[in-house]
Length: 282
Image (cartoon, rainbow, N blue to C red):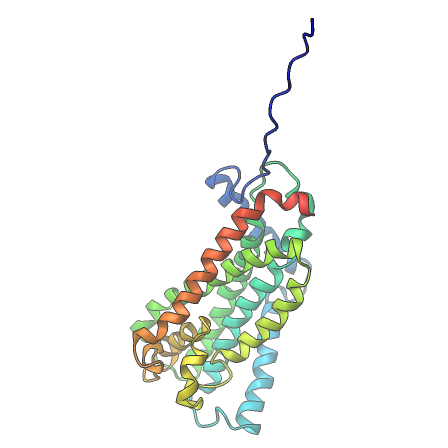
């Protein structure tokens, strides 16, 4: 008589999800990793966080000379230096958050292989670390804004809105890039080029008025363009054209809004889909 038990059907064992371990643990780990990385970068350096200002300030100095003395793009704008510095600092945050996130999951392979470690902590901690740098840099920017003669306005209270939109967009792109890089190593090269294109496609080096009207809607397909333009209006030049004015009505912003929302949805979907299988791919 055969007493051997019949084996049951095999079931797929999924790895830890994006938020594996609960929301409280997720946010505790997110804060811990972000603070640790922020301290690690500047630990033992003489100038500390001031190094985070060196890159945007050097870029600002070079571009200010080129676009006011050589090409004369901003020479007629009284607040062009303030506009340029603000745009560079904001885009530096966006580029730092997204660029550093590309290899973040792969670089944390040892952590990823641990049971129930929430994968989403890794790319979002990169974005949060970049946000720490941004918050410190914005103190310098606002000092520069006041020193240049820009009058404080109540619209400064609205600035957390565009800053939050930039952070969410950067976080979404970071999620997608970090998980795609696990399988496709070309992602780093592609995003390096794409980020450079976005820099020139965003009204940072030039005021939007310098662009022919026929290209306004094309430029504002870039979701960052209306956000940066609104920062200009609320923080620096209240008389500058708003994002709605540039595209001739709120309907003109719908394509950029659709791209923004589409990127965020795609990022959440692909990260949730691939998060349990990341350890297998590494």
